[in-house]
Amino acid sequence: MTHKSRISIFLLVILVLVLAVLGYSLTKSFSNGYNALPKTEELQLEKENSEVEVVIDFGNNNKLEKKLNFEQGQTAFSVLEKTAQTESLELETQQYDFGILVKSIKGYENSTDLAWIYFINGESGSLASNKYQLKEGDAVEWKYLKPNY
Image 1 (spheres, rainbow, N blue to C red):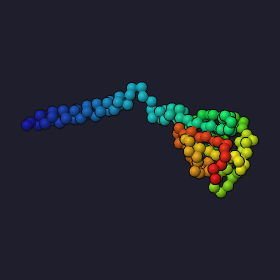
Image 2: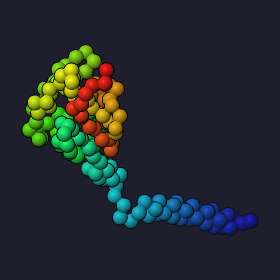
Image 3: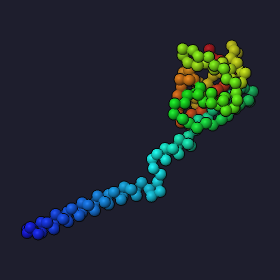
Image 4: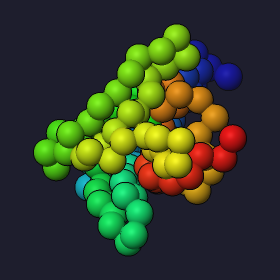
């Protein structure tokens, strides 16, 4: 093999490698979709579209239902507090070592007969409402009912 042949083969190999890298790069960019949104915009759209459902059940078919945008770090209490603010509902609470206790909502006060109990997706809460961190799509329901103790 002559020196000229080796140089030709070497240049041909370099050309093939450059074309392969270029082809791979183009394939990757088109496989993401021509009009695909950048990841940050996709995440923003997901955040805007995710919700938490909040229901305050006063009893006797008297319910307030609200959907709030889901935000990381929200608790069962924080969505109640936000709902109370936006709906102009009086909310009374008491801070204890274990967490916040809801004493009354819109004048409906806790007593030995009826008390405010929160539920997440149909299950009663096992933590203080300000300690339970919500997940996207959770349904939070505050019910004024007879305590089960």
